[in-house]
Length: 319
Image (cartoon, rainbow, N blue to C red; front, side):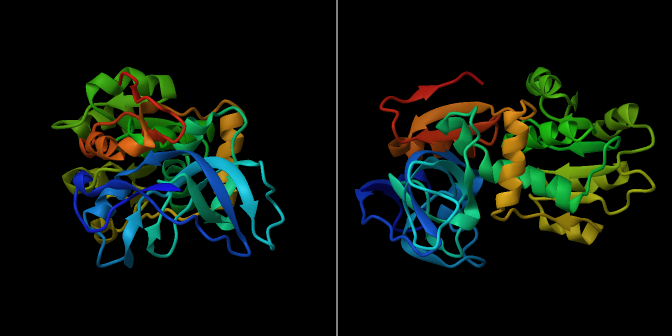
């Protein structure tokens, strides 16, 4: 089968398409015929070696953690999936080696759920990592409650877009930071948009004079530091960042995302109820992953970038 791999750390130029052996299927694993995967910044950051001190890496590496596709084979202990099932998942394993940028992927069932019926494979592949990050940080870390006000930084990005919609679906008022070109987009998702830059605190205070109840930070740095003062007097420590570990020194939580079947099923419920939509910023053929990484590295993507296995020609959607 074909797979995208890299044999050493580097940028998009280290990616190549080659023939590899089909993956083995463990007792509680399934083999998936891949239809689409999505690009997440962690994909190219891992390839650049940024997390070498934290995660074991075995070359050659097939990148990717998001996937959607059709179950082709199930292990002998698998009871909840059968061949032919359409699934999606966040297939994060303990080591960096066998990812999802391939024609077929072996995945433990703890990482998978049935694909939402109203999404195509491209849309479904865009959900797991970003959707679970938003869901887990809001529901598990911040413990949001209906009627509260939450501030989401980088609200127009992949995680931010999901976070806005999840918070709105749970009855929260959402203030979302974004560049002005994305303000109408955020309004369409249900957020009150505010611009980045000087005067941000004052703009937020105009909307929430007593401060916000919780903050989801997807930027880090000075934006994170200056945000602490925007919390209401009763909300000390209710700030989570997935971008900057120094949030812990500020009394907040450094968030991470983990495979979670219950979380995927909760996202599916929201999607099938029409409360959570998926915005595809660009589509590429899987074998053009290097170009997709270059686009992702610009870090101005609205929504998600998807790599399709069965698309012959590359297409782009306007941002």
